[in-house]
Length: 403
Length: 126
Ligand SMILES: Cc1ncc(COP(=O)(O)O)c(C=O)c1O
Image (cartoon, rainbow over all chains, first blue to last red; front, side, top):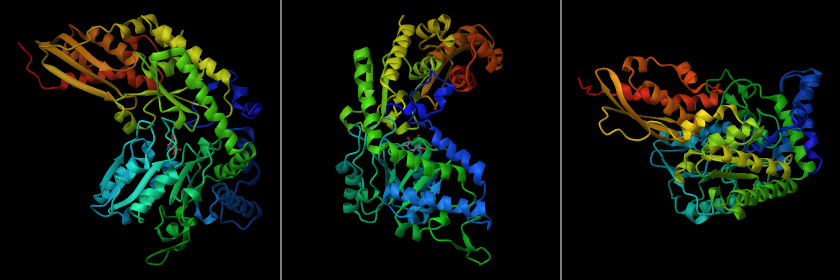
């Protein structure tokens, strides 16, 4: 990772930047910025419509990215739906699965979900008269298969959970979770929120055997405005469209309009073409560095940060999530007597970017009776020097608040 | 040092004035800032349309605590009417700092709590 920081132009514009909020959105390297700009400079045409050179080239490029994304996940191209984000992917699912849920059924989620994998299910359950069940996390801050098993029954329709918690940074045993609930009831649809996993840790959709999986481009060095929803082809083929409009219909004049096959029937309207083009380059970028190296580097920095924080602040710092379960660059903590907002603000004034609050995970914070936490998250452009600056900054925060 | 965390704000956040419960209060109200989990509650005693005493309790960042401390100090002895007429800018003047939109919510939680508290039905002693 030695020279990688140079690839991120934001450090030329802001040399002093200590960016420790990659779990919110990652920085973007030059090749990906260039790919996005390149679309506008050299193509600038809509997909699937025009019969002129740039339109045809754009369509080919767009579908190439779909194939590339499919290879990235080891799945088929027709199992890849382009969305705006993880949030849109999960909302899309909650919408198209509505007919599938009847009163008296239940939907199972976990207590460590981000709101975007919690609220769509909560709303769907309410709409359908179904029950929303919440699997608690354990002392190691992950979801245990046996516990999940005890929450599902013959009326469970959906089990939605994240691969990596955006607060604890811990990884859930995805394959085991999918297997145990399917053993209990093979009709349960399993949905994985991979927002914090994609691009940061190997994702093996086939061996996970989940039915659906969603992630965002912007959390894995890609552009904002594009996300991916994977769905098993047999399932996608049987589900109704989401938004209706251009680019997805066969016969719009029929009484019951007929729609294109998956994945196109889930992609109404003009997509964020530039972002999809950028996503293709993002996958090249990830392949070039290697997901395993990214994972090792980010988790390594997180482990170093945990020891440095404990060394500097001893008993007054409380780290959320067990180290041996942490499989990411995410470290959340609280400091005795200082509100996380104040920590983040004072560090922010020093160009050290961290996050404070509930991180869109209110159920998790409620379960721990914490009003808020501070979160740092490391990525490939961070170094040990950033950890030192973080510790220095936190020492100043503490000095300020000592009376 | 961060300009937001001037000595006076830190002093009020560490040693908030009017912090605690008010036994003989005739108004009680609460408000929350859902984005950061801050919460405040207030007890107010009004007599003849005047705020004769006020206390607050809560959990929150230095800005929300200091703002509650400043605000309770400033409205004590004022009329309910005057307190209800207070606006965003009055709080900023009290705090004497510029705030980003995100932190503005922290600073304004105290005003929201006060207004909710005063809006509660009460038996103003005559
Ligand atoms: C675990 C998890 N799920 C979902 C999301 C939502 O991602 P997006 O805002 O890109 O839709 C996030 C982002 O914060 C996340 O961390």
